[in-house]
Amino acid sequence: MTLPYNNIVDQREVQRWGKGCGRFPTSCVVRHLLVAANLLKPLGTLTVWDMTFGEGRFWVLIPQVRVIGWDIRKLKWYRLPFQFFKQPCWAWRYEEPSPHPDLVAIDPPWSRWQRGGRDRAHYWINKMEGTPEHILNYCGKAASEHFGVPLLVHYKDRWVPDGFRIVTEVWYQAVVRNMKMPKPSWFAILEPE
Ligand SMILES: C[S@@+](CC[C@H](N)C(=O)[O-])C[C@H]1O[C@@H](n2cnc3c(N)ncnc32)[C@H](O)[C@@H]1O
Image 1 (cartoon, rainbow, N blue to C red):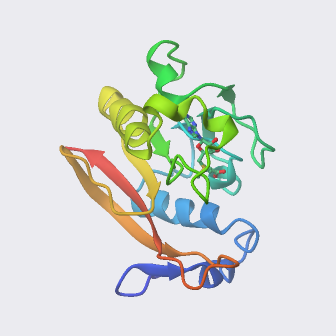
Image 2 (cartoon, rainbow, N blue to C red):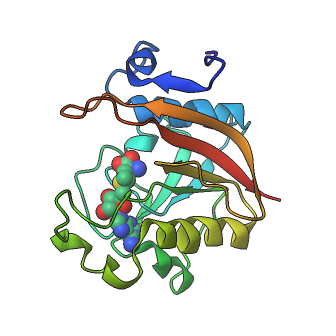
């Protein structure tokens, strides 16, 4: 698959790639990035620490990853994690699971507020420290640096912390009901320098 010159990929285009991409386009985008970064090997397992596991959608179509996940909620999973911590992601510092990661993934909520400015009840734990930036820095960046492994990021903006470089990136234009033309979001694999 070749991406257009500007590296923007439209959800509907991804859905035409077939093989499950129709239902799980973000998993296809993640797989594309892992292949481009040469992280998926034909044989062998890639251990991923997904610090904001959510529904596990990123991993549905990538059977060769073994996912250890954190999330403050236990949602309906589309992919079973190998191990799951119903805890804020920064808990990895106090209870360090094994095996250690080959890749860290972070897909933080883009805001700690619900539309309309009201608190999300289940985000109470984030009141003090759970800004998207905190989650990016103290979960994604910190774990990636600690283990010296690449970092997969999905965020509303390009986010390249000091000491990291972009290995590969894609802007993803999602189709969202009730929003006219949402800004594309950013998927990338970063590497500690
Ligand atoms: C954008 S979603 C991630 C979706 C996920 N990538 C997937 O494929 O399903 C963000 C997730 O971060 C979780 N979250 C919010 N604050 C968190 C925290 N402090 N630690 C861990 N997870 C958190 C939310 O519950 C939500 O499931």
